[in-house]
Image 1 (spheres, protein in one colour):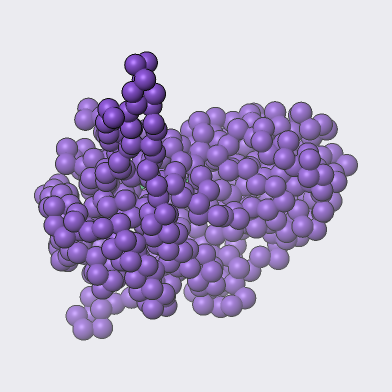
Image 2: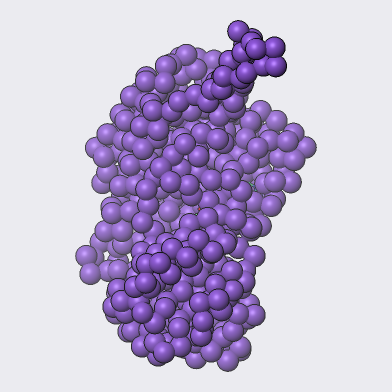
Length: 492
Ligand code: NAD
């Protein structure tokens, strides 16, 4: 996409203190659908990152810091209205960066962005205080109550898979709690964050409350931000190894972190499951967004009597997916985010073949024609014949692929599902609801679904155990991270 006036690629600048700010250098952002250049992005250097943190700090002392909870909640609702008014523009930004089907960006990404702001406006408007009346040995009493203050300047670092959804999932509670923010979007998806920054001003958020810096991670804007002494905490969604690097970066100044990291999520299908519903659900949990959702299923354990039926049904569902241009209503599946990510996913396809996998669907690069073969397309893929020790069944691939493995008992299914260092999400398919509750509770994960997947109530806790994260976000759980509690104790 070129700038119609200058004839140059669209320029995406940093957004600091309410103004567009040039970077130290530019980098290209291309469209994964066909590899064409979309924009030139201005990379923030340490000076721009420092300006952004300084602007955020100053905004804490400005009108934003003096607003009442109700005034903040009103602004959050206005932001949601503004997102809905500019819905189509946000869809264009998100689809351009990711190549995902337009219908998906509408139903999931942009709709959830508005919902996130409304949900946290409600949370903050209804939030109460902890208080205790304490009885003392001499018969007197003391009143303890905890007031919540904003954490301060929050660094928000987000990935490329659901860019606007994941950004607003952090931005909305951070703002609800009265913080100011410096956002570092993924270098792969700079567009929707840049547009959102403008919309926030339009909705009445004072300049400097939200700042956006562009760039990469290590030795770039991400690292400058996490090492900056002026931030009061980091909320991060992305790879586990990046979370580990961020933890090291903030450790000298002991800043709090909230981490939503990778997963290697299991589904367990019992023989009594509604087979059609299970296969449709598995197709969705494996292939939605080309498998690039942290909650996507990559390991599917199937009770032996129905193993062949599930394998055949899911392979057929994979072959029915339609890869194509985002605007085509028949398209169900977009490309991977980049050629680099496709190389990673293909390296696992190779490992699976070397490990003796039977490829029931896909397994390579499709030939699509129509100018698409320069994009980063990949075939929705399904394997059998791999065991729980194989690298393809242990490591997060983050593509449209799953391994099917048989089991013979409930205990074995739970043991297989829990045999991982990750612990983000799990799905149980069964018609026996007692068993559904029993198995779901024994999954060592943050989110355990029964006969469903990615069904969200934004008040419920979201996060992971083990390598999948630290902390929970959602509803009041988000306030734990985005505020500091001060207990006041008054002897009566
Ligand atoms: P990534 O970790 O490579 O990048 C995420 C963000 O961190 C980007 O903005 C990147 O520029 C930045 N970054 C990278 N190195 C950094 C550093 N050293 N210091 C500071 N910032 C740095 O992740 P990705 O490839 O963009 O996203 C995919 C990953 O995200 C997958 O592992 C997926 O499971 C995970 N994810 C998790 C959740 C969840 O809720 N648990 C949700 C979505 C995605």
